Image 1 (cartoon, one colour):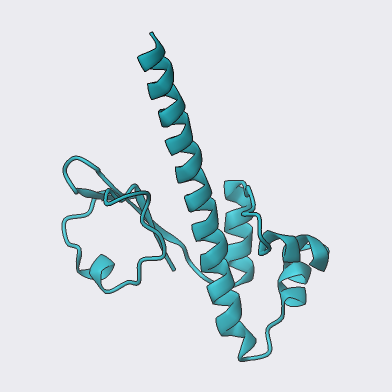
Image 2 (cartoon, rainbow, N blue to C red; image 1 turned 180 degrees about the vertical axis):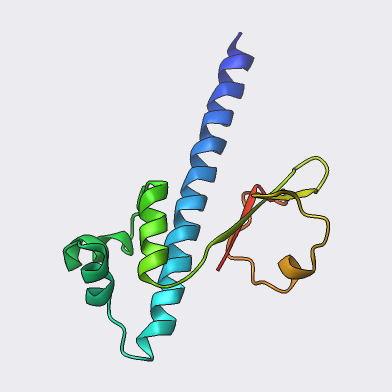
Length: 130
């Protein structure tokens, strides 16, 4: 019985770790977009204004703790930054890649895109592209 409890604790730990990695991937991706836009004069204040949020709230998103955004917030940030988000899931067992329209047969567009995050260990869980 203690073996099952330990397995559950490891599974919980892995799930929490994967969630934190995913949250950090989105924050890092948006920070990269912001950094790129800074060259043309875009500021964090501009993002806050576009989202109808106070600058300090937006600033906290990019601090030491990864934000726990809802999907609607991720969408709002992407729209405010004028970027599209492409998400592909990779099956851990087969390596098949799935997008919103089903299985992706050609990986040419994925291979030419920079990977922002690959889940834990050598098995990618989800890749986030900007």
